[in-house]
Length: 234
Image (cartoon, rainbow, N blue to C red):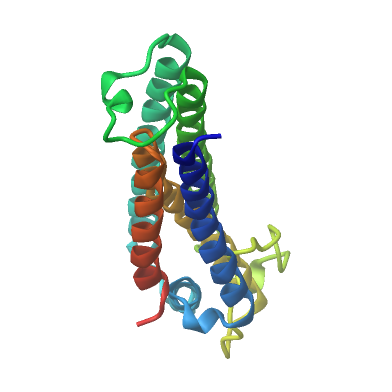
């Protein structure tokens, strides 16, 4: 195996290791110290928002408008993801040659049509992952729009869904079981929205991989630095 091939494999492995390692660390923080992450803080603030919106005697259009805006955003991002994903799938299936840019000497990488197709299929899988999560976000937001208008004491169940691995609600004082259940549904939708956006972020290093392994490594490193600022509580 040539030196260039070994260097490329190491850069690819390092790039994916950086991405996986960062998200494993974030997952551990969410489970043990959610208050140190922006995701955990957002879960807390959404719980307080639901509590305020379901307060006795407070019936207005604000919850519906807020959830409608969130649903529209998720729908737009889901439509974009599926359209781009189908375009990439068509390129992967219908293309018999690699673009000339991917074969330039400056872009270090294997000149293999099979590898090129694998890269495109991985990129398609990421966009499909985004579409799936944004659609689930729409589903949970729709449930929340109905549940939030029901008085807390009239909820017949304390749980409609199993809390997701991104949903770790704090013990907020004065929150009735019905309010907590609605907050869990709302945060479940927000968790899928977060995963969909995380997939969009992941597109950057994978798209750069089309030009070579060194670009994947640089993109992964840059993405982790950006995500660290996004995920860390101010």
